[in-house]
Length: 186
Image (tube, rainbow, N blue to C red; front, side, top):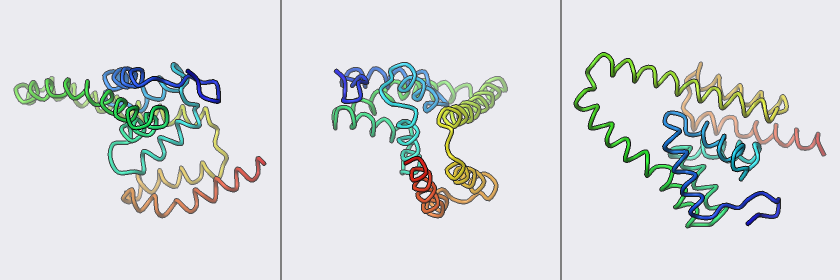
């Protein structure tokens, strides 16, 4: 079944299974895998749509990957789709995490385990940066939008401002940048 744009419209089981895959494969970088699966493999959403939903998911309370899953699940199949995507995203990884937590309780103080965890954290940071670079490269935002994004990056990483302050402070500039860019394309 397709929507009006000709793209596939996933079923509730497809949402569950796809998000189960994303959750199990995407440890440490769920949004990187979600983008790849949803945009490139399944083609359920465009790059632009994914970037917009991810942006919204990042400013809302809660895990941004869950916010995206709920939003897209609801978009495609309403409440059942949102529930299926959410349970798929967190159900499998939760079982794996419970097992890992039990193992960590027993072996967490071993130097090798600590080294593996440090390496995993570095890989996760790299995946986040890689996803941001790929989205930016594929979308090629206009300079005003890119300027707002750079301001947000500096506010968070250099000035270490809390996220609500960044969002509230830059939202008017983001809206103005989007309006200016859209006006220029019309």
